[in-house]
Image (cartoon, rainbow, N blue to C red; front, side, top):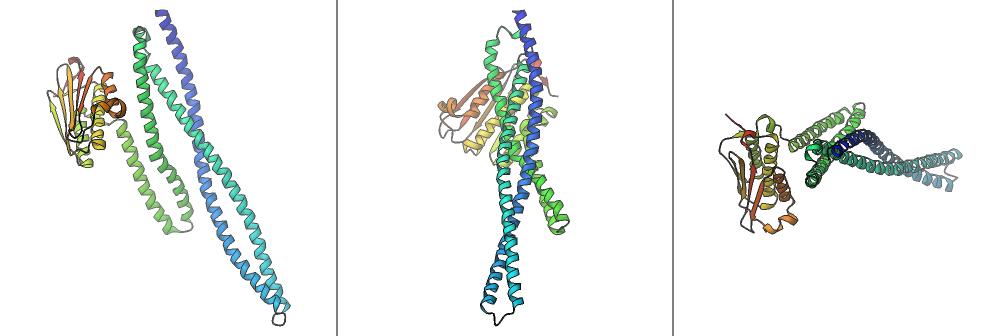
Length: 382
């Protein structure tokens, strides 16, 4: 068994090395495609401006040409009234505008053809970027799994089958979190930054043409940068509140609940019982996420006006209760429809804990959580 375990560890190490190399290669391709996509997008925007400019010039020349032809018809009908020079001039004006129109129409057709090609290229580049990013994310999850769950293969080989099921859940949770994060970044900061690049280029052109408009663009750029910073801060906080490491679980929850009350108007009573302790990092993160998920569910689904969060420190366990006075739901629906509550159950199971959910229509919801804890795993706060 030991030889098999050692052989598997060697195979895993080689697999991780290959994954690292492949991930870096794919990431390079993704970055190159993304840069090419942004360049093509900027080129398309400029091309659209050129097309619009040509169309405007065509409209203007066609009006000029129409007037010139009417003038030519007028002088051609009345030889006695107009001289040969007048007729020649009218003919030249009509001919010159016709030539200019023909040239511009040819230019318009070329620009539109180029635009169609560029739009097709943009579509392909976007698909390539999304595929590459998705592949990088998946490879990262696989690598983390191999490093994090199978490092001590010799010690855990006997119960590998049991851990395999748990690892699948972890991978699914990590993949979902990465997908959500990628979506948040793509829809938020990435879009704003791409827009900033284009607006900066536009402002550079305006500096030489219209200083007042350039100043106005700079003001809008400042607002866009502020929005981008807000999105980035929100994503960072969603990933991990920094105060969790600096201040600990209880102060972080106090801040979070105060902010939650201000944003939602739902009054939450936060009660801490027993001796406050600094818990292992895994416990503090898990408890914070459990409370966060429960409060999000109250805001999104419960239609509640108030609720309660109670955390009780015991010698060998942590008791948590989250309740609300909302509309409630049928507890039998949890397994099928309440994905957030299922996620809470999985978090508890990872720490060997238990969760009990009681709810009924129009009777609110009560969530009780018990997380086992050894006394040596916590440090009393003085």
